[in-house]
Amino acid sequence: MSGNIKKTTANKLDWNVGTLMQMMDDKEIDFDASIQRGLVWDSLRNSKFIQTILLEWATGVFYINKTDGIYECLDGKQRSHALYNFIKNGRKLHKDTPPIMDKNGELIEIAKRKFGELPKEFQNILMRYGLLVQSFDDMSVEDKVEFFTRINLGKPVTAADISRIKVKSRKVFQKLSKHIAIETGATEKAKAKFADEDIIKNIWIMCYSENKSLLDKDTFPIFESAEVTEEQEEELNKILDYMYRFLKTAYKTKELFSKIRAKTHLCSLGYMAYSAIRNSISEDEYCERAVEFFNTKDRKPSISEEYNRASASSSAKSEQVIVRINELEKALDIK
Image (tube, rainbow, N blue to C red; front, side, top):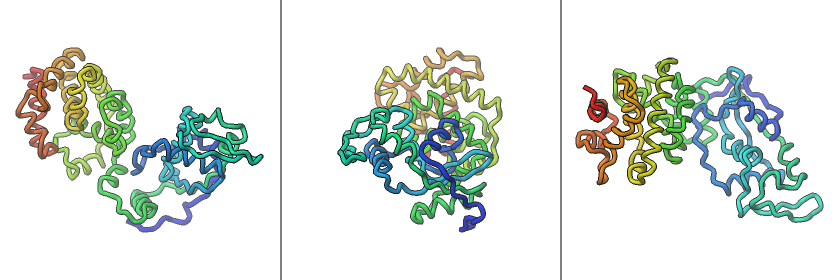
């Protein structure tokens, strides 16, 4: 770790909120890179941030890293999305948002209002508000880690955080994690902790890696060098289509849908779809077999005791993953 951000790469950018909104529309800012968490601000916190800008108070520095013509957001994801969701996506301010005084000294209620419902004066203040933006150029992984440690008051960056920014094909995994199957299956809490990406990566390991271990110590070095091929990406999309077919059916049964949303079982569904595709089994037949396998009358994960044991303790170990794979193939009647 360098412990130092090069002064020569630090630049101040002249952006306002309008600039930020346009750049987000044009996909010129990457909010999925590095080691930022998911969107965790609630409605009231988002609304109070909007109110802070309307009061024309300071809102802190936005930090970005410019690489390959794209601005990678290092700090400011929550604030940027609070603004975008309000201005562009029609979100209303929280019912407890305090009122704001206009230029005539009149107190104006803004709670439960959308951007277009605010007085023009307030809309202009918001869109013209100047942002403090600090830009770096092509930061190394080591500098990013040091940077995040500093802005988080010295809180150490975890090994998982570091490994995430080192994943060679992370853009592919991020894109696949936006598939409707993952959006449907993964919980919001899981998405905030990057579990949606982890599900895709685990499915990739189960399908394409000789080492079936899902332990972090084994997967970290694999993903630093592994490159997802175009053929694998295409097949993974098809796998996710199969999974979504099952999830639509599972949704009709509360107990089944709730159970299957566990990370372990979503990954198993992915491998089961992979095996089905490789053996020319249709989506409908895959769905029927998966329902039969996972839809038990008790709280057990599946009708297979071997699978259930392998899904309990130490489920990420290679030998346990292989047991699950074998049971999933049996469920599809693959010889």
